[in-house]
Amino acid sequence: MRLTKFTDLALRVTMRLAVLEPGASLTTRQVADAMAIPYNHTAKAIARLQHLGVVEARRGRGGGLELTEFGRTASIGWLVRELEGEEEVVTCEGEIPCPLRAVCSLRGALRAAQQAFYASLDPITVDQLASSSSRPVLLSLS
Picture (cartoon, rainbow, N blue to C red):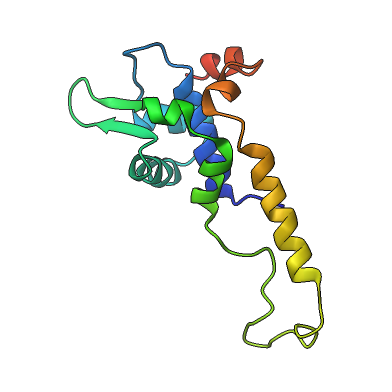
């Protein structure tokens, strides 16, 4: 299974915000620069994470980005599902439908593999990812 670049970016932004000290925040620009990601892509990912309740964004002086308590305890499996959507790995119906679709079991096997992939991520939280050996590297990004 391959994640979209958007999901990868959103997960990395979430991990970076997870290592902030309580009360500290970063701006979207600071996150984009630290992660070497274009600002517009970072802003879109942050907007989606905010919509999901994972990130809180405050405008103005003293504003910035912080991970919410929900964001800290969110399951990576849930977050990836939300960011990726419910599309199947393959599509059998399209402009030119697959001639095997009536007898092929590949679609079902790939759907089961996709569900197993998500299920393997379900027990892992954002805090767990940020408290691993990646914490010092995440903290050094500024």
